[in-house]
Image (cartoon, rainbow, N blue to C red; front, side, top):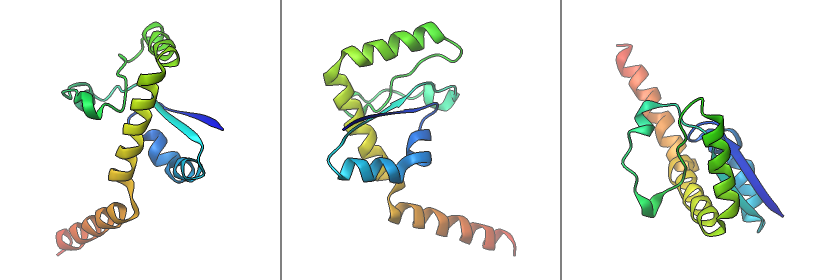
Length: 116
């Protein structure tokens, strides 16, 4: 089965559907993740690392540019594969069980320390 997941912002698909995405990918399905728009200034200012590219940036409130990027992605199988592989690697790096536990522990300890 081929599955295309759209997220409005960076990490939306991974956070909202990370478990489902990982499950279907582990079952041998072809899963592609697309970040549709990123209005966050901090991400728009990122320097692109082409070897780790996991998104296509589109200006906020630009439906024609968004449609153009989606069409470009649909027509470019090699880029779709590269983006999806890198997005999956990003999801695994940022949202593995160990990473999430470490982040929650840091948050908890920070709240405890600040409460003293």
